[in-house]
Length: 113
Length: 111
Image (cartoon, rainbow over all chains, first blue to last red; front, side, top):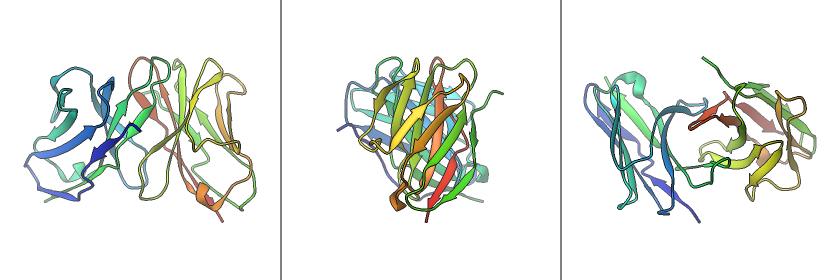
């Protein structure tokens, strides 16, 4: 059974600080890793994806992947109240053409003004 | 920016009734998916669809569920005889080269 684990939170971070969100996955055969943001009652919205070990930066967001430790994280710099949402980690194990996402339960992040 | 469109946004149906949820994927995307999210729970994969046939389905996707692409643009999910536990948000998604883009979802309420 392929699993994706996240701390459900809630995680509270002061405005302007760095929010750190973590995710672990069960199977070394995983291919791709995605971070989605989901506001209450809305659909998942892609923030960024990462395939290779190391860091990937996009604006205020940095994804970090460590395949040896089966660990992926998301850092949000200069946190804003609008960043308050549930952050979903998702992993792809499927072959090309069948790239289904397996989601974690999500971490609820609250940015405190 | 291209987007995935789902209709209706909210559907209320009586237990035992059939429902059809509709999706218009991004036009040049080739792989289509349905996911569901029961309130307060994780997003769960239902089915993937490629080249006009199902690629994979989860254990949730039993004989009560079916998918089709009737006209080359729409992508539908049918639930033949709804149960109370089918109440959830249903998301359509599609992929081109890499990441999956999600529609805004259909909230299905079975009463």
